[in-house]
Image 1: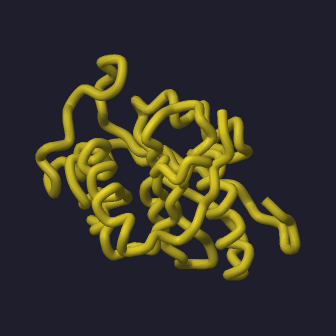
Image 2 (image 1 turned 120 degrees about the vertical axis):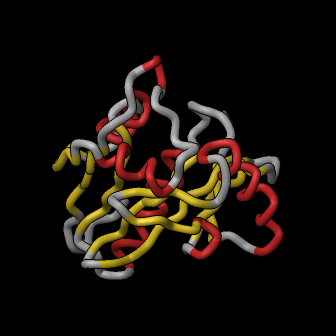
Length: 167
């Protein structure tokens, strides 16, 4: 595994980020906690490998004293892009004076639950039926998720950030 650098997205990243969002979410729109987001309008960090290749992206929003990770996706698993992006998002949160880093994932996303909990995020809420409601806004959301797990609920994960703590 080589080094991963993270930087704010630039216009030259548009095609790579758009292709990643198409692969992961079926396009630039995600529906989470009853809100439809256009990922193209959110601040985005990109991960670049040591050869200069695009390795992933994280779209976020700063609101209510926290940084919400709205989308995190890597081009390949277990190469460090997700970890580097999450650490960079924490640095952005701390610089903005945010006291928490948080996100929402779905009940079927066992890989994400493992990934985030290993990085100190904890499940703080379950919104039963949230994905069923989201399907009304975005009908392309499947009924079966990873491992053929019925897709119904959102799980909120969060890590509190200590003032002055570095990622």
